Length: 378
Image (cartoon, rainbow, N blue to C red; front, side, top):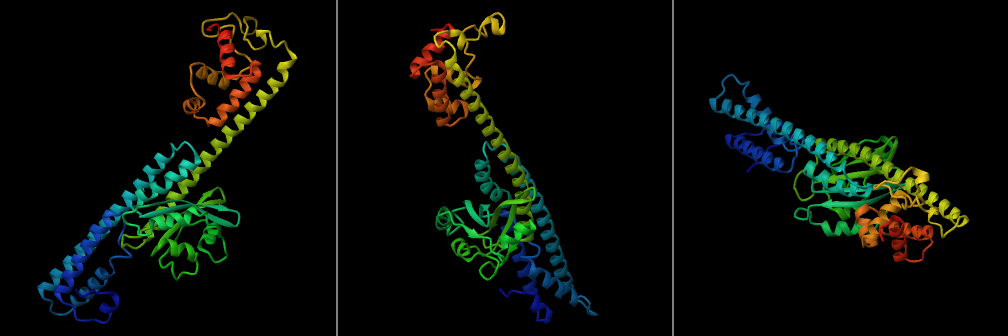
């Protein structure tokens, strides 16, 4: 099959009906392949179609035009319209995919699970083979997470190993990532092997023929990057791919900022709770350690006791400590308590040490026994 291109058409090379048939058939196959991976065609895959259409249109200006060429031109125009319709459909699908992915990621329990989930989500949304999330640390950027389709990526394991070595890449003045930090906009790299803006060790490890990347920005600060490619698809990266990863990274920055803020508030709340516990523990020895009123909520403090708030309930214990001790008194292990309350096991151990100190006991069993006695249940 003879391939036509713009240069061939420009020189008015002989064009046959078979050439037209081949170009139309090839374009239809390209549309099917591109649809499977959510890729647009205009600007990358339809060069022959555009060139041949222009060539045939010139022929139609002749004084006498055979009907066969009029029919050929009509088929070329229909295929051009089919390509445009394909591109419009893919853009809508990708936009919806990005929106849905961000909606799911909004429920990520931690900032790290958000980053980990984003690597897969962007590939699913845009039909990409591989994605990588990186962090900016001072004057360097560090790859953190890679998601790739092993069935398409011939260097999947090698690239995971490369990223797993915690490579730190300088943000040199000519590097594309440095440009993204400065301009805060997504970029496309069509020939990374020869592009002087790329970091060659990671390009060799990735084996990517082309890629796009976008900065993850919070306010005016670039926290990291999101890279995508189509390695193994035999499909080029398009301008629409660049726009899609840019939109995804923008929403990811907003989600990461929210998740990080919530985690910071939670850490601050735990620090305050520990400080209050320490203060109470320091005051406890000043009172009679044998008097249950030291740690009991009395009717005098809170009114007459009810079934929901018995007089023996622990006033010195925080709500979280009472919650933990309730579970421990039911036989739960530290690990089970941590799972139930979404805490780390080390945090549960810290709470138990504080509880024992407050209750003036030396063992877990003694703490449970005293707790039950104060509650009137043991």
